[in-house]
Length: 404
Image (cartoon, rainbow, N blue to C red; front, side, top):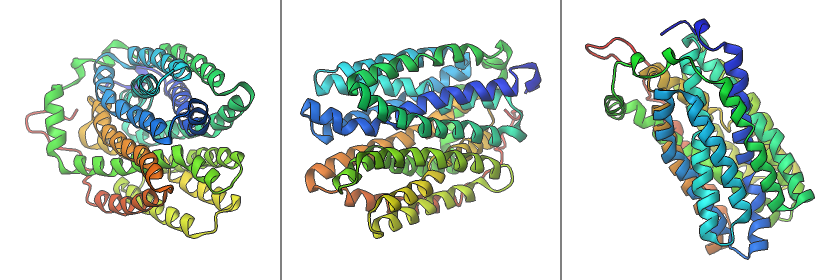
């Protein structure tokens, strides 16, 4: 790999990558605040809204594989530009959708594709190519922490926008804000010699076949499925869960903001620890910690205090799986196809997200309660902890090939 000092500076990569993720993830994390205003104003069910967000997560996962391929081959610049435009178009369409079908296409498909081109897989590809291996886990933790700060900062902002402007105008304001990613993309434009086939000893097909034959890659995908199920269910449905139990709307806004604040700490800490300890053990501890936190949350009396404590704990475990998982992928397979392979693992995450958010709406409409989905989230957390323990983090040995 060419020296990172010959490419983009570490500071430029971290600041611009962090700002992109702050905007893209910050906007996304507030979608749960729109569930009740939109469904009540439009006369739609919670399942209608949940299905659109579920489609969004699935579209994000599927498009993420192809966005990763393009970013690995052409660099992140073009992918970020397309993602920013799609994000703005999707948010505007979400505000103006007259029917559930159009809402599913805009809030679901368009925004899902936009997130594929503006979030972790693409930005982590730049980090992997531009920063040295000994700083990679830390840098990924910094970027994930930025996404967490985006949640902490943007969720209260979105809540205030809804209160001051109404939900439609608030979405249009966010559409304009998403376009700030465009100038940041120019600052993440990579030198030509750091992208493209010249740096790769494998074709895309060979890299994919190698990964899916490797048991640890499949185990990481299984764990990431659980991550998606848990965080998207909580992020989208917890505001309504709290309101159903008589808590004031601002409790949900503060809870989501606290998740974002403590996620800054959790993701950064996970990135730092990943430089020193086995990342598989870090992942197992995170998933087990989530299962325990959810169990205690359901057992304790539901008060603003218990909500805030739960939000702080689950926030510290929220996206801390992201730097550890992506660092393992880079450690095993190298960085030549990092965005694409990260995209495949993230597709599994988004299948879990689809099920988490859709099941939340579906089972609520059928039973009038979220209890079953909470119990599923606990069981899956234990499962994910177990499947991450056997992951082999050592670099894969390729016969006849130099390390990627």
